[in-house]
Length: 260
Image 1 (tube, helix red, strand yellow):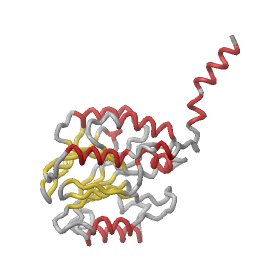
Image 2 (image 1 turned 90 degrees about the horizontal axis):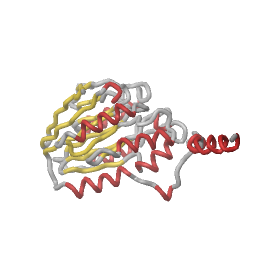
Image 3 (image 1 turned 30 degrees about the vertical axis):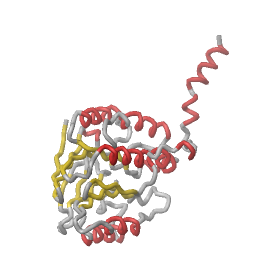
Image 4 (image 1 turned 120 degrees about the horizontal axis):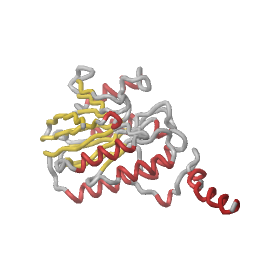
């Protein structure tokens, strides 16, 4: 009887050993979901400039809240795609990524994910790459360019956001292209304050970026923060039963805060 109990205990603990802080996934099995979802998006729509999309943030370990907001978004027939602007995990562990994926993958429409500072912890950077691919990437919908940018400093591998890549992406569109930047950390917070904040905000102003949409602060805000014509949005955490919907009409847009 004791032997049987020991075997059962070892079997039940299998995942405990698998999800050590150093657990990762073979590169040969990469999902690359951001790119996969972009292909789905391109195949399902024609070029259009009137649509809406949903934005969520900072789900951490709030899986019940995440599951609830996914249900709300799925009932919104106008939402073309969903963006999660980072901190999809709490400590960057493999089991957290797996839990997140099992919920976010219930979305009916394509979704895209930014990396947050918590997602870098443990071996999280490698696991993020497995699930979602490159941390910096761009998608296009009609005359709209959506740029996803990793601006994590303290927890990142290099401690230096790739501003050269960012400038190339936001400056390379046509004159009538509307540009939206998604990133986890608002530039005025302590990770970026100082030289990096100046680089970022000056770049947004120089290239007339329509909006910068972030998370990290767990509270909702919409403001022309630097009084330079660029709208900055912080999306509240899903733990506060909150997300936003962005309505795009040509080169104009509006933000709706959804509390449920």
